Image: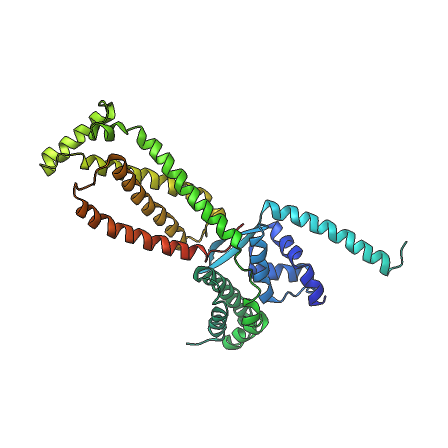
Amino acid sequence: MGHEQLKGNLDMLLLAVVADEPAHGYSIIARVRERSGGVFDLKEGSVYPALHQLESRGLLRSSWSAADGRRRRVYELTRRGRTALREQVEDWRVYSSAIATVTEGRP
Amino acid sequence: VTTPIAEFLRALDRDLRAERRLRRARIITEVRDHLTSTADDLERSGLPRVDAERLAVERFGEPGDIAGRFPSRTVRATLVESYVYAGLLVGSLLAAWGVIGLVGGALSEAVGRSRPTPSARIWRSCDRIVNDECVGGFTDHRVALWIVSGGLLLVGGLLFVAVHWLLRRRFVDDDPGSLTAWWFDIAGISTFGLIAVGLLVVGTGQTLTGDGTAWLSLSLPGGLLSLAVCLLFVRDLNSRSATV
């Protein structure tokens, strides 16, 4: 998938992978790649600013944890984030269904 | 030893110069962890360490581009935090004043403005011990002022820290290694000390040492210290990541 298309949906993807369980940036990127079968290979450097942005909007919260002697910032979904994710997924369903209808010539 | 990751982090740190110290430190720590994890994985797959780090850095992107993407701290977030801080301070002070008011008869008794109360009698006992048996000759209400000031400082400070602890996850950087949270407490407690002593001096019309010059010499270093702590706090306030 093109980077521009991916960029438009980056927030939804990040919220979706954090929704299952809290995760740090590296594992968030790995989960997106894994779940999409390698189709979504996020630009790594763009993920952290996006996570900070989501946090500043109150959709994620984060805290430090220690693993293997290293400090990691772990992100988790807030209640507002869960609501926002539900809305974004619903919008996406409507949008992708409309695209399919048009491109496949279905009535 | 300069490694590709260390070089990258130095460049990123330079490009993040506009960010305040603690926020910059958080970003650098996160990126360092990411790059190290990537390099570790690549090394496990057979790449030499230096090549693994170089590839990890390449994948991550340009430091200047990445630095520009981080959201700026909003004025609103700074204002909200400042208001919360001020609210906590005033609220805790009032609550502390109420708690101390329960034993406030001690102060009134000390300056001869009301009848002795049970707490005043308690104070008189303390005063007798301190003045007559330990210090000797120090027989005015100054000890009472110090006791009540200390009480205000202690109770107010504890209340302040307790409320701060409850709200820190939302309003303050919860990094246990960060000094920021402690500036918040130290600034609050220092301010308490000054306000408490100031109120008592104004309220009783007495100086703590009975001598204006001595009072000034006592309060000036404390005031300067408190001001310095507050300035450091305000500086760090802006460095925290916005959470509102």
